[in-house]
Image (cartoon, rainbow, N blue to C red; front, side, top):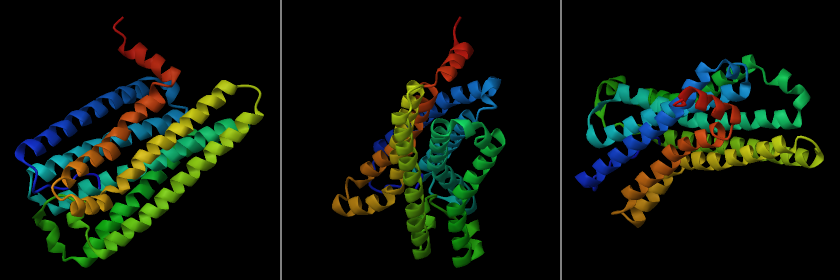
Length: 298
């Protein structure tokens, strides 16, 4: 899920504090990432580099995800009657952007692997044209799960239901056995794929680093970047677990599970989106140089 479920036991002060924290954190993430988006589009040197194209795709995707996610959270607390049709659109966008993040991170890890392990072929394999095609494919793959949920609902429920109102949450709209089976299959496929890619690329870079006598600094940086990919991937993949853990905590600690649910939402949906500029932008000297140039007070 990309939003926190409505809590019937939260006090007014509790859910207002959750809303305020989420909105503030959302503005911070979008603001910081917005600086990198502005820098990218203002600096022509980034246009022809697949690495930066993938990175800015990740940043824009995360900005969309955070924006829609916070909107869904606010709506779940303040608005009890939302058009199902409008809600489905928001859920499709939120789910697709959530699924896109680990796929983009995997693509970035592969790009670094090719740059280090196959440097002579990097310019032929990682072209700008292929990078844009890859970005389109990522969106296509990311849209499959939420569109599948929508199609299942269209098949199972009468069409007039989409003209009615409800609480906007995937747990309310997509709660059939078919939706649950789809979620389990998707989680298994996504988790297996992204971790296989990360482990393979990291260990290949590690092996190559031991063989190389020159450019050790570049290899060391690539190893660190892919390792940081793994940390961010771990946080992103944890976003698949809250629905299951919510059910467990609802039974174990029924008076506290909504607090856990909110913290899980922050850790798995918002915090990883703060890591992107730290892992890639600030560690990149070219990006930092352009940031200083664009936003320096001098």
